[in-house]
Image (cartoon, rainbow, N blue to C red):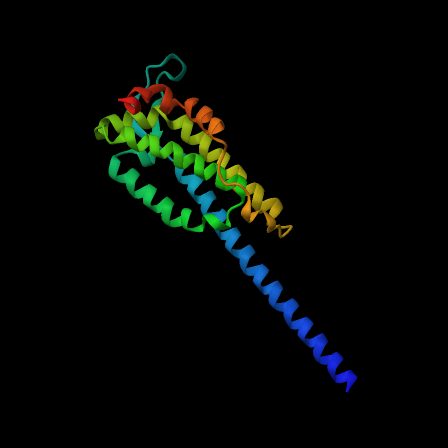
Length: 193
């Protein structure tokens, strides 16, 4: 009788362990999928489009002028931002806090960018895309770094305790980073008036 009880108890423990492992695997899979979506987002942010014009700046003389592809026109940008929401923000709960901080910083940048874009023609948007190209390259690089860092370190160690980590930079940090962007330096007057 005691042997049967011990056997049943051990079987329950084994089943509970198996259930816990399967649940942990599902969470890890969701986190990996969310971070892969972030890497994909960072790639779209770095995609460059040629304007067809040639630069006359001394440091870039005779080179084609390059801008960010998603800023070719307002409709393209809005469609891209809709995709970002569908593919990244819906999965934000699974992102590491560092990755989520970068994603939220990009959202703050995009809010300012959208205010400016609302007052520009498609030709002006193309010019803006050249000006903000360094911003997009820097933001996408930071975002990609945090996503790859998670996948190469934390995902392997099955670290799950960070899901409740703080998800935004402190306001002074965000403001400083935004104020250091080409977007704000070149178009601040469009935000204030």
